[in-house]
Length: 118
Image 1 (spheres, helix red, strand yellow):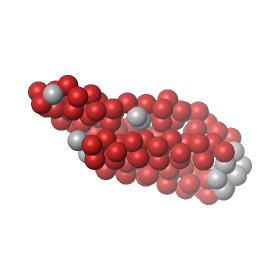
Image 2 (cartoon, helix red, strand yellow; image 1 turned 135 degrees about the vertical axis):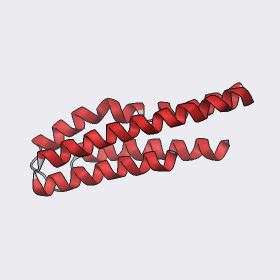
Image 3 (cartoon, rainbow, N blue to C red; image 1 turned 120 degrees about the vertical axis):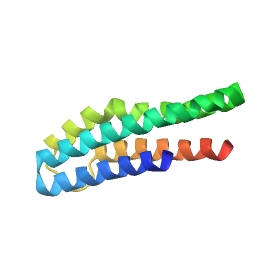
Image 4 (cartoon, rainbow, N blue to C red; image 1 turned 60 degrees about the vertical axis):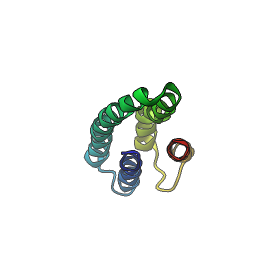
């Protein structure tokens, strides 16, 4: 599930890059909608899977809960990122791209670290 979640963030970044070359707003909005829908579905499945860990011990449960927390920074900045991409005339990476991509990378790294520790 975590790998699938990482893929949907990568797919969104691909949609942003496509928007930069085509300026097709509907494709960007579709990418955002797909990210939000798929993310909600995966988070529901993760929440259910994590609930099983609570029976195994609080420490494992707390670590697994972190899988959901790390992406909060990404989702909190999503609308601002989309707005900056739409306003930008740059087709190459902007500071906003770098920041958002770094948040996605950080969340992915933390998730992989948590999974390795379980």
